[in-house]
Length: 117
Image (cartoon, rainbow, N blue to C red; front, top):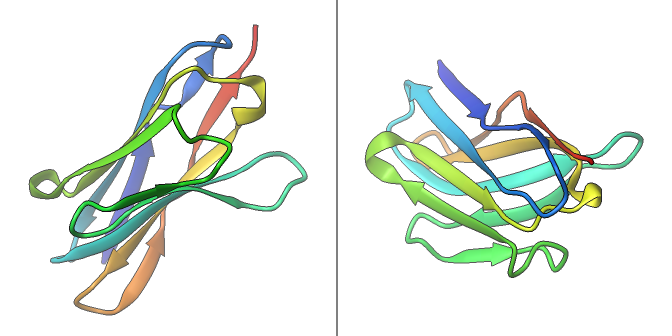
C-alpha cells in the first residue's frame, strides 16, 4: 500500500510564501514523475508544476517565476516552494506521484492554501 501525505498549506497574506511537501511512504520503490495540481472552489483541478525522475521541471504559466518544484529522492518527498502568493492561488493543492515499478499513479488527499489579507 502506498501513502501520500501533503503538508505545508495554510493561510498566508498576499505576497507571502509557503512550502508544500508531498511525502510518499509504504510499498513504493521507485518514484518517477511527480506533479502538483490545485483545485479552487467550483473550478476544475488544474496543473501547477511537474518534475521528472531526472529533475526536469515545467510550470503552468500562471505560476512561472513564483513557484519552484524540487525533489529529494532519498526522502521520497517532493516540494513546491510558492513565493509572491496571490489570492488567485487559493485552492486545495494535490500531488500526483508516478510509481514506475507498478506503472501506476497515486493522488494525495490535498492541502489547503488560502491567500488572503
